[in-house]
Image (cartoon, rainbow, N blue to C red; front, side):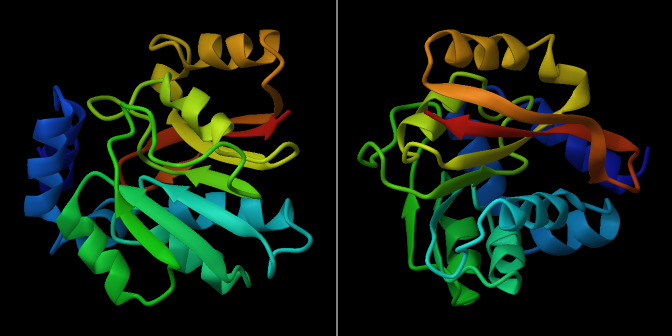
Length: 209
């Protein structure tokens, strides 16, 4: 088994936020190299590009990068001209690497399995890449991403194809639509995720109502 595959198997087997926090604190120093070089982690680039096309006034938009990690998504957003980006993550060590990039307005520690310490209707857009997955954050977090988004705001998320339906993400999106808090604007299964590990995701766009 390849070293990248061992890492993936380990993180997808995490059982609770405490395990996630300690694992990502340990991994922070080599995370970007291991994922981008070792696994071909392309989802941050593709998701950021998709969100940028949904924000015609991108230079003025306030964006939340939920589960920001070391800032791969934030850096990609900044490359598309977004200037006001806040990030949240469970790992303090990952946040320190994100802070070193100098592209975030604010970075805060937050557990995405709980209610976020953010007021309703705070952001013009929300993006969440690589966090809604096995051993990390479940579909219930979608409710919080919608809550902190302003009416009309796009919410771009990635969810591994293999868990989109079995782990309840599809059903949660349907519930949001039924509750008239968000609508599913776009769903693109088989989107790029880890090119070297042949892992794909559903790149979904929700619109807060």
